[in-house]
Image (cartoon, rainbow, N blue to C red; front, side):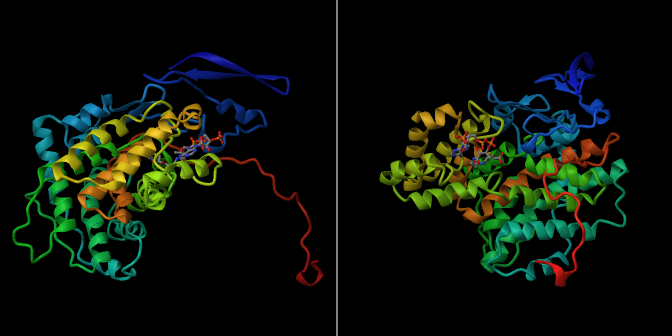
Length: 426
Ligand code: CMC
């Protein structure tokens, strides 16, 4: 609701800009009136720009608060299953027992992928990064669901969300199996979401006695929940921007996967483990810290655009990390190294002054490693989990009128000049 206006004077002309308050968080200044002023607003990195209105996720970076549909992330991670959280992201509330049973059943019905999709995997080199494969095969789903998919139809949008959430574990596990040269495993619909994913990752057809591990399953499910959504981050904004053109939703999610892959975003969990490998031992931490301070390298798994005191996801992740390592009896020197790094960084003025704290990816990599997930799969797991968030934002956008996303620019290139024939160019 706009209840007051901000005033902006540009070239002697005064503009009244409505101030709009949400239910939580900073109010925004609606700058649409600038259209008439002859100026654009300029905000590289969208540091102060809200391009959308959303009801899905709220973050208070100062307080370290993350709410999905109003529910605090730690309560969700500690009490709900990932699919319940996915339901809340999609539909606005946690499901009743009946809605939960129905939703889980729908997801189970759609876990399998078209057999033809196997051929796409065969087109990749065995050593292809699984994120490269995921960009390709999730994008390829658009070829299976295109002609009959009408994005203006609510039922079509709903089934798209179900299909994506259901098929992501299958595709993620297939990308791993392919890299290992092992046969793909069909989904087990008698297993829950996390169990099924771990089964498709680690079982083989010869494995008649595949055993589930409850601690690992629960940790995996928590990792899914902690990564499910994070409001208008780079990959979600990518999905929304691609979706704003009316593009096929599977292609939009593939665009989100591509954006997530970068080391400043979801690629950070993989980068944390690579960084720990590079540091090697605790004795090398001070030398590494000097490199960080001279800006030669970044301390991966530290810092966040929004959280400036702590990342609430990192707190739950740290507890889960302790549980998993204890349950599995793992005493990994990498963990000791990570803890030494964390301690030094938290006490160092360089990090304190810049409000740099461990983020979710600092610990998730350590848990995934303990579970036996190879480093190259870390970001794939992030993508699997984030799919519920991405598609919820896509649904939210499509359930109301929206405009194509089309930013402006500050042009600093050549001014108009005449064309010169190639033989006359100097
Ligand atoms: N190590 C060392 N210095 C850092 C780091 C870091 N990880 N992050 C920020 N800084 C410094 C940065 O150099 C700058 O210093 P100065 O003001 O002296 O130039 C200051 O802190 C502010 O940094 P910024 O680049 O303006 O911050 P940002 O909000 O643009 O970047 C970030 C946020 C997450 C991209 C960045 O902190 C980073 O690259 N972190 C490492 C990668 C990482 O762990 N990413 C995962 C984010 S959580 C998962 C997700 O949501 O995707």
